[in-house]
Length: 344
Image 1 (cartoon, rainbow, N blue to C red):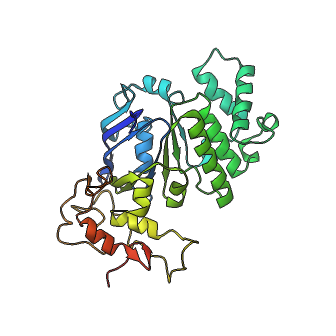
Image 2: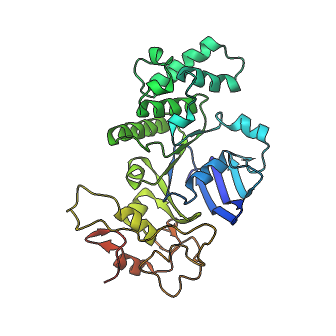
Image 3: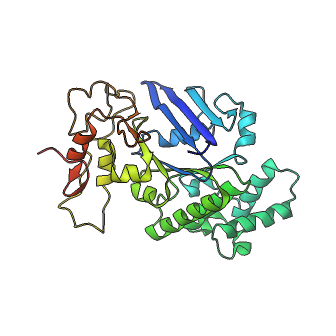
């Protein structure tokens, strides 16, 4: 693996609430190299967005406790001051937020908001020069007639165009790391495909180190190089795209893969499903946090397994499951495909 540009080590984020401590992120570690796309997947509440927002320094509050390390090159971000983070955001790390309609200010023109992002860090840039740069950016992300549309308000853009405008704003200062949090949520499938192609193209052309946060493994299959699967604040499996899709080692990953419809396979009687609901972060079960929903739980599951490589031929493919690799391959089939199925 190339030298990482961004290194996250044992990141832990908790929030004090009236009900107790919510450990939203518990020991997440990964590295991200230039030109690489890392996908972080999992159900809502698994800790994906909190991980990303903590990297950006957006989870700091009186009730938050943050531990571990986030290093951008040789700079530690966890203990950086707010002023230092303000200088880093947008310039070195940028984020595309989940809902562009609530991220864009509805009373300002789209171009004005891109100009503001540019001049906030480069005050010496004149408004006319910044406006031309905004037009170039909107054109580069596929907004047609950008010179005219730069003066439109967000409500005059379609959902896909608003998402493109958010990507343009994120790229305005040419950051090294781009975090895209559910960038295709609420978009129809044709627009989803366009946004994913755009992210893939920008990543290749600019050598961005990209983190893609999603719950949709279909999105992951389009653009990711590596995948982290999160559940209840922890990484339960990580590996390359091919390892996760063709040889998944954790039952939770099987469930996520089994829920995808496949047009290239015979139609199943019904899609396999993950029973139950994710546990409350206030009352996590001991040991494997997925065991209450896993049909293959056994007597070792009350002990927490380490995230470690269990395949001699692929030591970088790591998971948290006590089942042997041979037993996993026996159990993970559901109607001729990977999925989480109740034992017969």
